[in-house]
Amino acid sequence: MSTRILIVDDHPDIRKLIQLTLEHLEDAELHETDNGGDGWRLAQSIKPHLILLDVMMPGELDGFQVCQKIKADPALSHTKVILLTARAQQTDRALGEQVQCDAYLTKAFSPLKLLETVDTLLGRCR
Amino acid sequence: MTVSPAPSSNPLLALLDLISSALVLFTPEGRVAFANRAAKKIPARPILSLPSDPQIKNLIRDISLGAGQRQVEVDIDVNSDEGMVPLRCTFAPRPIAGLVAMALTERLVLQTPAPADELSTPAPAPPPRMSLQQIMDLLEDELMGPLDSTASALRDLNLLDDHPAALAVQVLRERLDRLSDLIGIFGDDVLIGDDRMVMPDMVRDICQELAPLARASGTGFVLEGDKVDLPPVYGSQRLIRRALMECLRNAIEHAGKPSTIDEKALVRVRFHSAGHHLLINIRNLGVLPGVALERYAHGLFRPVEEPASAAEEPTLRIGLPMSHRILQLHGGRLRYDGTPGEIDVRLEIPTGARHQDTQQLDLLQAQLYAQDLSRLIARSRPRSPT
Image (cartoon, rainbow over all chains, first blue to last red; front, side, top):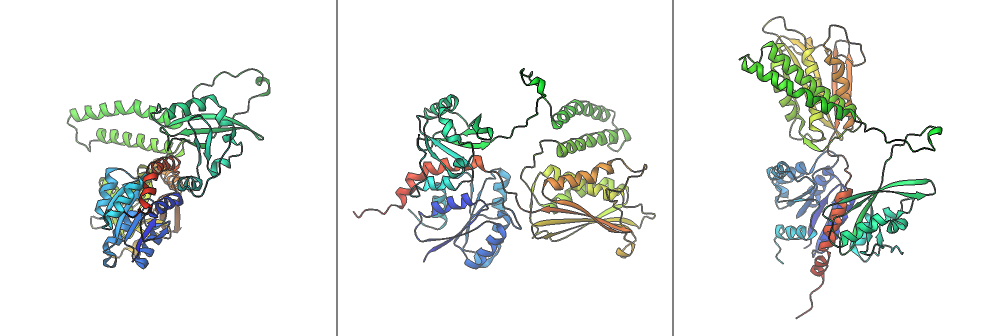
């Protein structure tokens, strides 16, 4: 069975980079969108195993709120969330913990580090 | 010199081609190894002339030799059919996969036409011009010291915080602070930032700060709205706070005076989101004796276009236009809706973050990708059977 991964980021370059990085994963089925509201709706419909979520996005929901909603939804209890953001302040990390993200990575990020984090969260060992 | 097209087989170059910022990669010898699509689109074709610029050549050599410590910016002018094109070259401090990376942006130059008789002689260097904000910062530096000394002297006299002298110092400090914000928002270099703000929390804080003023005038606040689903706002926390503070202070000052101890003037703040905007509605409900709130409601906000009377506080003439400007800077607006006797103020603020310029981040990200590229490829390569 393939691993469903949802990428939510308003920057197309970053989405492309994440895609290029995750192409190195076996059996990954990638979905993407550019805003939090659509990210949340897509998460409800495809029930991804993992979401890579930007924090600062235009629109009705930001990454913290999407993460909070995912973690509060029993139907998405298996979904892991990586917050991937340029916000590197301690207060932002604390907010990430508060909304129960599974990992908090700051941009610019190392693709290898991202892959390692994805592997760990999905329970894969390499 | 040749400029090679981005081979689609190379994922790094394909990625660089997708980036909207103009990026150029140089070999250590100073030749252009790659220019992305955005760089090739710059009209003056700088990628043809840059390698022969001695300053650029030296920089490339230094960075290749590892002498670069941090990001370097160089301003150059390139000839084109339309005249000189001012450009800014931003170099990454370290080579990426043996190549020196540079971002290219067009530089904005303000030009003042010189009078015809001055064209032949070089003009003397203009004196450094201070921005309004710099002048205000200086003024603050000048005045804050004496104000602090005065406040300290008053404390030494054991005067209570609500003593008229202590209050006067406090008011002076607030006015200075306000003037600084005013200059800031109408100045020539407004920085908005990307603070994350949860509006109900901020309004609650401001109401607490204004509590002494509200108590003194017999005014109370009612906050309505669902906090859980309200989207956050990104921007300048200081300025948004200033806008809300001005509106709420205005509401208190125009809330009317209760004539009996049982009466209270109420200000209602209601939040809700609509589309990609957060709406904050501030309405004076007037002086109310208990539960029949709406029957006694009357508007106490004055539209900003209406001339202020001589008896009014001068602050009101600044407050609402200032709030309006702050919201404009954040992509929102301030609206006055009203019928005779019932006027309210609505603040509309876009939710979520505005699209950021990520040119520097793009460069750093490309650098990190290049560093990891070989290991990524090795990772995905099928292992040979042993």
